[in-house]
Image (tube, rainbow, N blue to C red; front, side, top):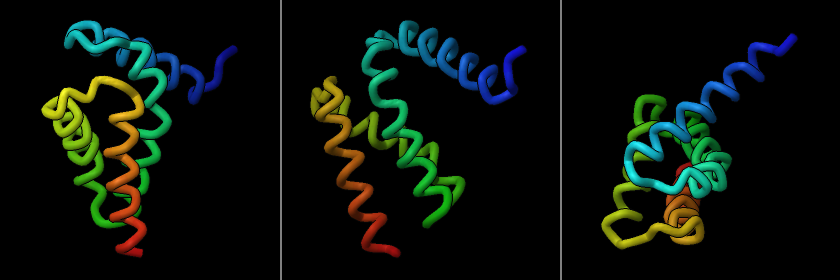
Length: 90
């Protein structure tokens, strides 16, 4: 029998793969970055603003997309910039 956490994680991966494919994003990049994105949204939610957490993830994606940043390293660079900003607020 699977645990609820396992089921939720499996459902998340299925959804994210489907959403990425629909939007023309390589699901492999999503899989590689999911931990970094979840860490960022957790830090925002437990720091400056819970409602701002998902929108912050959107801003990272929007910023990377506008700059032509379609590699994990480019997305991580944006996440790191915001992580440093969060550190300054603590």
